[in-house]
Amino acid sequence: MTTPDAYPEVFDLPDPADPNAAAVVMARVQGSVDKQRPFLEPLARAFAERGESLFLVGGPVRDAMLGKPGHDLDFTTSARPGTIREILDAWGEKTWDTGIEFGTVSGIRHGQQVEITTFRADLYDGVTRNPEVTFGDSIEADLVRRDFACNAMAVELSLVDGTLQPQFHDPVSGLEDVLARRLDTPQAPEVSFRDDPLRMLRAARFVSQLGFTVAPRVYDAMRDMAEEINRITVERVQAELDKLMAGARPWEGIDLLVQTGLADHILPEIPALQLEQDEHMQHKDVYRHSLTVLRQATELEDPDEGPDLKLRWAALMHDIGKPATRAQKEGGGVSFHHHEVVGAKMTRKRLRALKYPKHMTEDIGQLVYLHMRFHGFDEGQWTDSAVRRYVTDAGDLLPRLHKLVRADCTTRNPKKARRLQRTYDGLEERIAELAEKEDLARVRPDLDGNEIMEILGLSPGPDVGRAWKYMKELRLERGELDHDEAVAELKRWWEETNA
Image 1 (cartoon, rainbow, N blue to C red):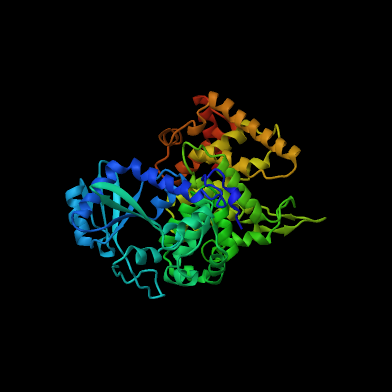
Image 2 (image 1 turned 60 degrees about the horizontal axis):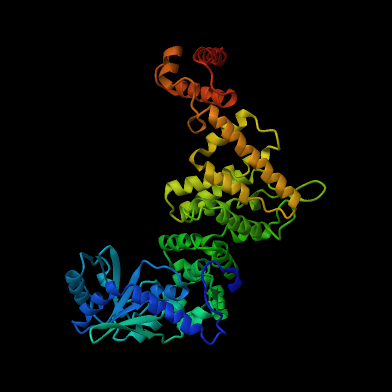
């Protein structure tokens, strides 16, 4: 299980043993409110004038304690949905109430969006995750029904003599959990997860995003209730998985899903890797290797560009074809011939099952398919033809493929690691050299379809496609030809084909 020390870059929290720890994080909350006072005070006044209370709640409070910049503002209130709508209509520039049946109304003012929900006291049927919406009458009852204690804290936006005076509410010791970097449920986790099994997946997401660990009782409940995740729609599962994969340490979130058995139901190809040892016998199993590749791929991302989900998913899935292709080698050891081909098919099938968009499914599958191409060549054996094919097959995915291949080097042998990186450096240099001579991103036949039809006297049809494909292969193999040479090659191929 994850240790808090694994996340120094995710947040900066004081030692929970420090007697001033609580004061430090509460000062951050106060500072966050003060920074947003010009925006919050008029909103609080609008609710107070209607005799209603207003609370900043959940993620914004937690993130303020962590010192994380936040943009979303979530509120809960004693006001009923109709009243919220009236207040926001007068206060903001635009209001929308698509969630009003669940008590939520949203608005925007000066570019800042707010989402405000009436206190809830929902009842769950234990079959679906959709509750019977019931509005509550107190902040305490509202907070107790939330997913985790660290998300069950609120700041009441009280006005004293017309001035905003925030009041902190923490009925389930969320502050203590934040300082301990712990995920625990306000109620017994069995009750919380039975109400909404998606919360188990959210736990793994917060492990990835925040670096928290799950409390032992939460871990046990996730393991015992993993099958309950099948009550959740594929669309909701996909949304949570993407948030997990976009977190600071997605490999930790994935590991929690695997260890608790949740992955058996939503990503069964990943726990299946635990049964396989990689061909170098240098990792405990292919599963651990895959988590390492995911970590290394994440570290290769440009921090200014944000998480690259296609790269991360490809890194996680790149070896899922190994269990199906495992074979014993003479003299000992195992091989996984063509696991990239099988893995690409499995990747596309799984992503389609999770209802990912076609472009995501195809691009991630292609990265899995191509990730072994580099290993078919040793130092100095990259011909111009091989380089052209590598670049052409990767297309727009080439920068991601570079990172994936480098991330896939997890050998513990320093000499071998340096050799692999040096070889790939050489390949990138070759690509750059050829790119100066040829437009590798737009490698096309030297003759287009219209020219092919004119030269061979063909009408549109399959023969034109076959001829175009031959000329494309010729272009990749020999580079750019002058026009007369290209025409001669086309005629020669046509005569041989129809001899």
